[in-house]
Image 1 (cartoon, chains in turn blue, green):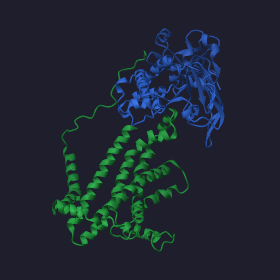
Image 2 (cartoon, chains in turn orange, brown):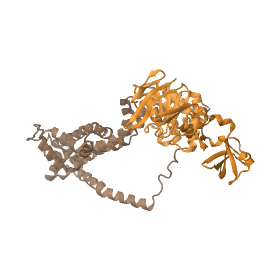
Image 3 (cartoon, helix red, strand yellow):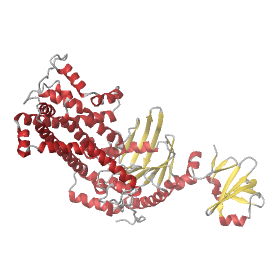
Image 4 (cartoon, chains in turn brown, cyan):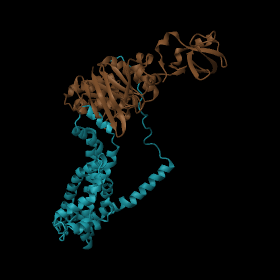
Length: 322
Length: 281
């Protein structure tokens, strides 16, 4: 395990940011700390980097107890949401900073910076100032700067949070591919479940200062440990007393199967390739999503009486609603 | 290197075009008023000083400036202003740092006190200094009639300049930038020297220029305490006044022209230094 966090707690005044958190982060993987804002995930990341001190608990990085080490001795690369660019230095000088203060030979620095600028696709921008770059370019510069010192772990705090949706998606794909090449242990904080599911090898769900669940994207999505994780990772609806995913439900018009709920279709909405059907039963509104093809085959419209049941292949995977 | 690709990069912002373009009527009018104002208040009086100084010809000018007593006054004034500016650069930055970064009891009060040398009529400052450090000093410190008195008076009136120029810039600095430097392995000192100081340099230089200019021109705060002894504690402003009182306007203008040239040179030099430091990082 690359990073081991054991029994870490942190308070800011009376606010409990982290409450006895223990997590192990595997070497060489891309791990997401996922959770709602104010849930403690950024604090956890900053404690790993040494930018914040834990009140109690230990942090070990690559087997070394880093709890009492200052940030500069942890060999950790950190990327901030708002880039934290050195504004008075060119892109090159920004990337070279970590190497320059380590007094590496000039030729070596030049070579390494060239290599990194190619890696982040900024080779023509080396002489620009950060202010002359777009947000996405600045964040890539920050990433190159953090990678320059060959950190044992790379930490990214909402790295794409300040970018617009299109650039965010591009950078997300690019980060995934970059990680497949560089293989440095990477932890990134996000509140965007889609980002975490798409990019991460492993996801740690953090909420209200506690770890809710740790697992691969598939495990979290298919077998959420609790209500919170289920709701946070994707759309949910309630069927009887069960919390289920709307796309795990099937609609039938014939005889009611055992366990099926009967109701009237009260609303049909089309969102792109997906059809959202709201079925009102005696005591609740169940939302079902299905593809256009399946919807057409059903011949259902608003006012029809239908039965809603869980698709047989997912029956085993749902949880009790709280 | 990498197979990862991205959409082609777009320049962050389109270059500002038509820099030398024509002015609109409103901005033309604005520029006209600004120039007229500036000319009336600054350019014409300054030119008048230079013209008056040159009326006695080059030899007249040179005689006035190299007059033993005048030269001593210029040396004292410029030298002291330099020294004081140097002290202010260090102390002003330090005070600004404390005011921005630290929390302590009485901070708000200190904030207000810093501005007192701005607000106080200089002659009142002189009176304060005289009663504190004069012959009847309650502290037992008598610097009356010494060059230290000149230095102290300069220090007193120039204190706020560097503090007030550095403070807002320091407050605007993003703490994450320092954290980034730390995570890259920089010590506190390296972070200060390579990251914080270059960001503060333009502000420090501006404060230093103001501080120097104010020092050179100081009169009221030192006139009581320094004793204005020729060759020892007489500063240029006092010297100019006595020249005028002796009806020697040419000599007064010559000294003024020299001070003008020195102040201008200092401002230019500070600007050059400032640009260098910022670029070097």
